[in-house]
Length: 211
Image 1 (cartoon, rainbow, N blue to C red):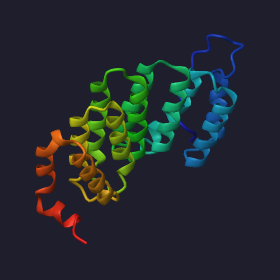
Image 2: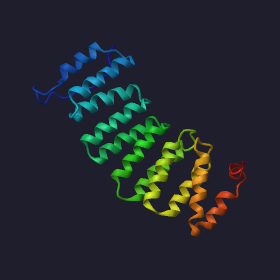
Image 3: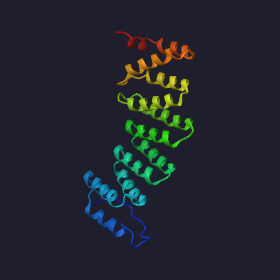
């Protein structure tokens, strides 16, 4: 039995892929992963600017393989090219609901929000969601790096200090790096002396500075 692809209404008999063509592809394919990815590639090559058909094949595939975060990222990429911000957000929200613990998905989502949202509070809201879910992952430094970079360019230093504090709570791959960066940051920001005491008073953090 082939992939369960929904049918498009055949509004224009001269359009690229009609219902008959979709049914034909359905019969030739099978439920295995390789057949699905081949079908996606065919749609992307032939109908790269037809968002309706792109949505059709991706929605069908991701209903079968919702944890394939790489294809959620590709789907979002098509939406970025062809749709409004709201439509891109819809795909990312579906993606993080399905592949919740994918660090790469959260990095892509937050990166998009940085470029799409004018209000920093909207951007921070997504960063906070992402770090609260995958912030403990040993390899989540990709997301922490992006969050730190964003707050640095915003130059709202209390927010940056808060991000550093949060990044030091978990034994991630770049924990020592964040410790050193945080220490340097606090030393050049006299107004944050109180935060300095908070960060470096704990026994676990003290161990990091030991040789």
